[in-house]
Amino acid sequence: MKIYDIGFVQGVFDLFHIGHLNLLEKARKHCNYLIVGVNSDELVQEYKNKTPFVPLEERARIIGALKCVDKVIIMNDRDKVKVTQKYNINAIFMGDDWKGTDFYNNMEKELEKYNVDIVYFPYTKGTSSTILKEKLAKL
Image 1 (cartoon, rainbow, N blue to C red):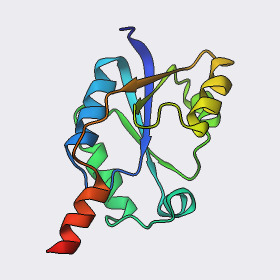
Image 2: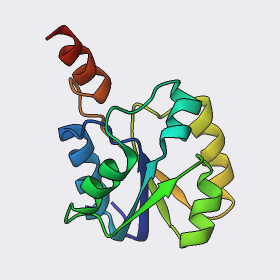
Image 3: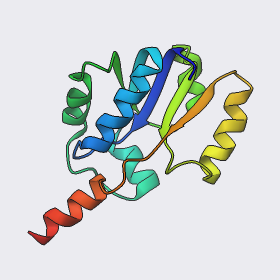
Image 4: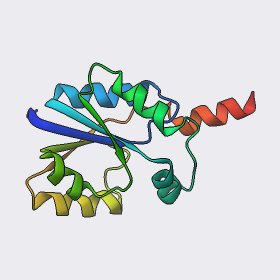
């Protein structure tokens, strides 16, 4: 697989789990510099209609402490064109659970104009922040 100069991953990273770590480590193996966008609480509420369990500042600090992450930014929107232009990003890494969605089909077409690739990695089955929240609620 191609090695990109600057890669980008965006996510909520609520209740950090092995799926998050797998995605970030795989992304870092395929770029020289990895920027991670942590979604603000307002953004998560807007597109998921949920409020993260872990506060934004803590989520950003956790992500920033990982050796595979070079830079953390706070994201207030999902506009990948804007962020790729601002930070000269060459590739966006995603879990393949997003592949084929209308949002990412449109995003792929937009980013193609700027020579930015979207690279999908296999989603870690059996774990998610939603699953963890559901299990915690049952306790």
